[in-house]
Amino acid sequence: MDLGVALPTSGAFASPAAIVRIAQAAEEFGYAALWTYERLLRPVGDVAQPGGPPRPLPKVYRSVYEPLETLSYVAAVTERIKLGTSVIDALFHPPVMLARRFATLDQFSNGRVIAGLGQGWMPQEFQTANVPLQRRGSGLDEAVAAMRACWGPDPVSYQGRFYRIAPSEVGPKPVQAHIPVLLGSMTPAGVARAARIADGINPIVASEEVLRGLTSAFWEAAREQGRNPAELTVVARANVPITAEPLGDDRPFLGGSPRQIAEDVASLDGAGVDHVLFANSAASDIDEEVRLLAELQRIVSG
Image 1 (cartoon, rainbow, N blue to C red):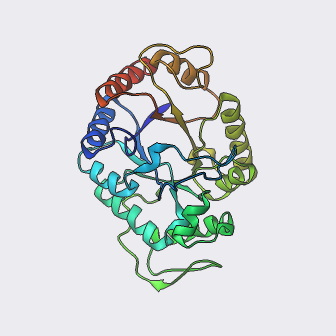
Image 2 (spheres, rainbow, N blue to C red):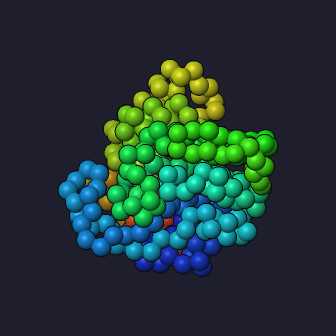
């Protein structure tokens, strides 16, 4: 199983220097991919959130480095490691602009891009982007289709309910013949959509049971769509503490010491998960994170 690392694009020690340090260390240690994410803003006050009552957003969202600009910077200081978004909310961007930005990054990185997309959930961000919340779902279908049209041969054209592209030349084209598109999906409808239109799914790890259920549902839905399993992937996002010392029995799945995490990773063998990306929520500084990432990769790779 491949492992990935979420770059420190937000939080107490987010900085260009820290981002470069983690990126280069992850490549040196043999991690498969680096990941960023998007947050347009952090509203002041309580926010309606999935899975609970309205409450303030975590303070980590006060400042979040823009995902594609960050990865473009990282592309210049790395050579081999993949560069992914987990996720960018596609509905907040005109598809032709987002497609061109991904294609530009693919050019600068010589074909290392993974386009992880989501449909968004926070009403305040939809208001800021001037996009109706009701566009979720079918709007994401169209955004993916329009982006893929832009990555294809000229002249590009697209006619949908929400997006239209007049017959045009759109460039640059990506280095990759097919930029992989993952959908950050957690609901039955989202899983079905990923199986139908995407190259994979990027769920958040809520628990081992939830992860296994989502993964199983994705592969079943993909089979029903007649998709080729060899062309699809499951990338699980683990927002967990990685700690020097073992955690107790109440630790989150895929969280804890590197050895505990390695045991959890091994338990997923055969479950249909291809890649786990770790967003460490416990490191006190960059030096500690680098040490723990090195130990985790060493143990997992045997």
